[in-house]
Amino acid sequence: MRFELIDHLTTVYFGQDADLLFGDTGAEIMASYRESSTEAELAALRAEIADYIGSHDDLEAAFARDFSRGYVPEDFGTSAKQFLDSVRAAVQ
Image (cartoon, rainbow, N blue to C red):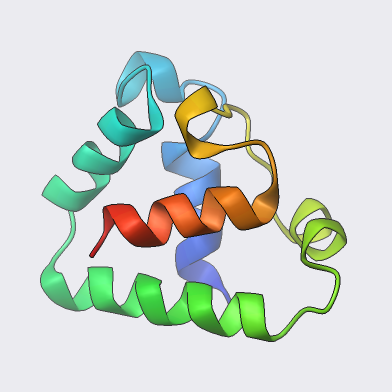
């Protein structure tokens, strides 16, 4: 898969049991993600998000097709763009 880091993030960290494993908010989940990632991995995720956003004219449809989020915390927005922007900001 071309966007493996986004897939891992949405499947594991924002998966069905995210609130039980990583935190109740997007900020808590991303703090857990940052703790378990190297600087190189965080940079790769930022680059992958930029590539993904730039590769899709209809980001909402593409994201819904490509990734599932079992858990959508309110502080990370409801749209795919809001979510990806929030993730990218959290790994700066």
